[in-house]
Structure formats: C-alpha cells, structure tokens
Image (tube, rainbow, N blue to C red):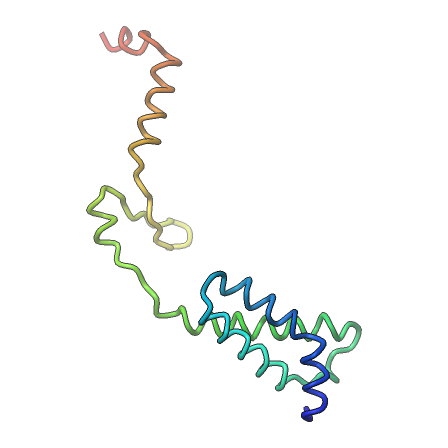
Length: 131
C-alpha cells in the first residue's frame, strides 16, 4: 500500500479503528494506544484488492482480527493465584467433559438466602420429618 492509499484508508477508517480499540481496551488508555497502533499497522499491511463484495466490512474485520490477535498474545501469560480464593472457602472444580478447571465461588449471603427460602417453603415440616 502506498502512502497516499494508506492516508486515504486511514481517513475513512480512523473512527472505526479507535472505536474497536476503545471497546477492546475499555478504560485502559495504554492498551487503547497499543491497539490503535496495531490497527494502523494492520491497515497498512492489508491488500485491499482481496476484498471482493464489501471492502469496508472486510477491512474492518481484518483490523479487528489483528487487534484480537494482539490481545491474545499479550494476555497469554496472565494468571491469577487461586491460593487466597481457596483459603476463603472457594473451590476449584473440573468439568468432566472438557477437563477445564473453573472456580466455584462460595457466597455465604447467597447460601443463607437459599436456606431461608427452603425453611420458609417447608416450615416446620422438615423438622418434624427428621424426628
């Protein structure tokens, strides 16, 4: 892509690039700047002649895909220690079908509410059945 072509396309898609970057970065301004840069580089690298029916949609999708790829590379090594969560009474469960481990958060407030709902539904009947 020549400088003139890039300037033309950037003028057309600048708002879209910044909008996608803001949506993906949320309130992180540094990440926003990085994603805008990635979007501009992606736009520069595009061969717009490959877009057949709807070039605008194709260009926006290619830019967004480049931003998502960048995020995947950046967040690959981010992990969170589960030690404090496990100490607080939460537990890790593994899905038997997929093998994916996930955190089950224990919430005393929700558990208490559920027990109160059960007690109010059954009333004294539950106590009488236990005798």
